[in-house]
Length: 258
Ligand SMILES: NC(=O)C1=CN([C@@H]2O[C@H](COP(=O)(O)OP(=O)(O)OC[C@H]3O[C@@H](n4cnc5c(N)ncnc54)[C@H](OP(=O)(O)O)[C@@H]3O)[C@@H](O)[C@H]2O)C=CC1
Ligand SMILES: O=C(O)C1=N[C@H](C(=O)O)C[C@H](O)C1
Image 1 (cartoon, rainbow, N blue to C red):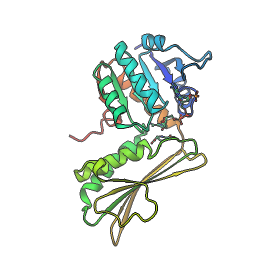
Image 2: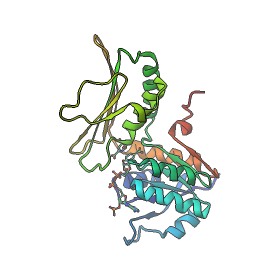
Image 3: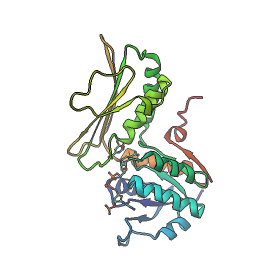
Image 4: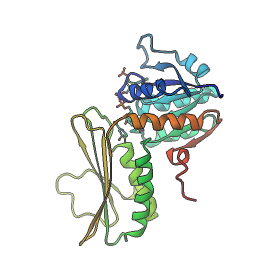
């Protein structure tokens, strides 16, 4: 029998951190050895950063883009452990710092750990490849709970990347985030994002392909954070023991097309 995987949860007191702790306590393949909190926070659940770097097999992060980026650099500086990043809202320079860290440690980062969304990514790329850009517009919408701080969501951006990839363009070149006032006609080929926040919505995403005479919508609804948590644990099991490299859930789930 293999030894249980030792997990530290960064952001363990948050909504997702709590879901991860419930999921790993229910699975004998894992042991929860403590949480990392904000600098200065105290409590019996917390472990020091030095102890986490030394003792964990994998740190699972559901904090913020800033904290996750800094954690990746701390792990890289110590040469261990592997890191699973679920936080979202990264700026391009933060993503560059995480890629740099992944030269020294193994990282899985995904804006969404659900099987459904990661399967949807492939369908969106396929649809974007098939529907001609000249006649089909692509719009992505997302809705989340009132406490979410970043927009568009990490998932919406994953879906946007998939649509752009299907069309053979860079998302940065065609994205349109938010519309307000007299913004003019829709540009040919743009990929639009719209965002709603309210109540306790766990996560709703849809990608609409709209032509003059027909509309196709691909959508996903998250009903419970438990499935994100179990997805993060499967990423932890997959990455444990690997020494370097940057990966996503498509790698973990073997969904990448060659
Ligand atoms: N990839 C995925 O599948 C999913 C990703 N997410 C993402 O996960 C992140 C967290 O979401 P959620 O759990 O709802 O948010 P919460 O606000 O509930 O939790 C965030 C936690 O991070 C802690 N935190 C903040 N700053 C630091 C820091 N510098 N060091 C250590 N801990 C810190 C907070 O501490 P304190 O308690 O002191 O405030 C809090 O416990 C978001 O970016 C969200 O988008 C969410 C769901 C699924
Ligand atoms: O903040 C959340 O709650 C969620 N965040 C992720 C995102 O930004 O896409 C995943 C999920 O939609 C829930």
